[in-house]
Structure formats: C-alpha cells, structure tokens
Image 1 (cartoon, rainbow, N blue to C red):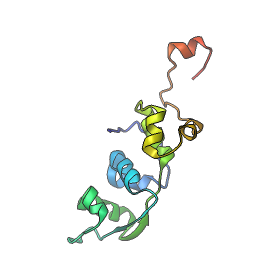
Image 2 (image 1 turned 135 degrees about the vertical axis):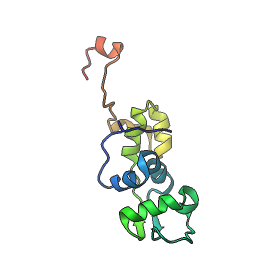
Image 3 (image 1 turned 60 degrees about the vertical axis):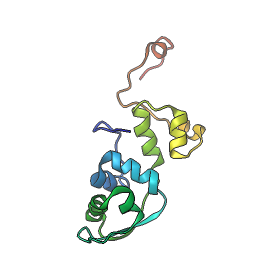
Length: 130
C-alpha cells in the first residue's frame, strides 16, 4: 500500500517512526512489531542480527536508532492512525478492521473521516453536510 504527504496528522508517539521510515515504513513497522519491544543497534554497528533488521534492513534500524538512540524501544500499536490512513486511501471498513485486528464496530466508532470531505450525491440529497 502506498501513502503520500496528504496522510492524516500523525500522533506524537508515532511521529518518530514516520520521521525515520516514512509513512509507508511506519505503517509496516507498526503492523509488524506494534505492541512489542525491539532493540535498536547503534547506527554504525555492522553486525545487526534482529527481526527488525531482517524485515526492514539495517538502514531502517540505523534510521530508527538515529531518532530514538540505541537500545530497547516499545513500538506502539497505532491502530487508529493506521485505520485513518487506510480509510483516506479508500480501504473498506471491513478490510481496515482485518488489517488492524479490531472489530469492525470499533473501527466505525473511531469516526474515520476523509480530510477532503466532499459529499457524494446521495449524501447531499439526504441532507448530510461535510
């Protein structure tokens, strides 16, 4: 899935991941390692052997270590932010629920909105406003 600069506002606890990996990398990181603790080696350390380095590469680990510093960090789940990003890309609520491992009713309660909120004809005729 491809993301762009029009992605929703990034919460402070997710922003360092977006800074280090970009929006695409941050979403992938949160989906893969969210809720767990990972170890970041020094950016100049050549012998990185971790699940993160295997999955994302040594450059990504180095970029994260530059932002966070070397050591252990907890990766946030970021489910609501990921859901908002996916929703703005046109992903269905059911697919979002499966992706972020949440009940579809929970995803609905999050009140996801399109930032370029343009009404379609049916909504306009029904008297809804943006």
